[in-house]
Length: 266
Image (tube, rainbow, N blue to C red):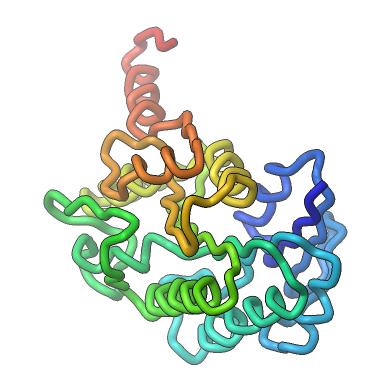
């Protein structure tokens, strides 16, 4: 059985990651104690603490970060830069097999965003973004994720570590997706339709990237649902990891419209 450590376990993506491994031995870390989860507090910016935490682990799913795409650099540098370096140092010190790094669509979204101060929006007909396209961050947050991907590349090539840079979309429940769409203008709706990641698909892509054999390391995976209006390419992730997303933002929203019109949906 594989021993899997998850940082940021009490966060939104972290809770789906826990659900992705119902039968595995998980060690959960969070920035502070959680009332409803059995987690161990971990300050990821403290290298010695991080190294000590990963003893006897095989895989690290590193989700801990400041997740705010509008955050200023001073609030990002510690968790998103120092913390990532410490994660990889801890992985190598403890002879881990793999690190799944929670990157983001914001690492490649500049061409398709209205502006850096309004990053969750998309205009026009977006270019298709493939996993091996050059990074193009849209915010300081996106810059920190590009740094994390580069750090993973270094440790993969220098130390032979299996590394997956998982570019996570926008994790929302179906009801939250509907609410976001209702509150957004056209550019905001376009982004939501493209970047939605359902809870179920989040579990599927995290499990796949943590457990499937890699053809090469490092590798990039796109973590979104099978949205008809996506512009992050899913073909490579589906082939490499046998990821089979089941949900589509358009279907959720079309069902909502049909329901309001009194039409039967299946």
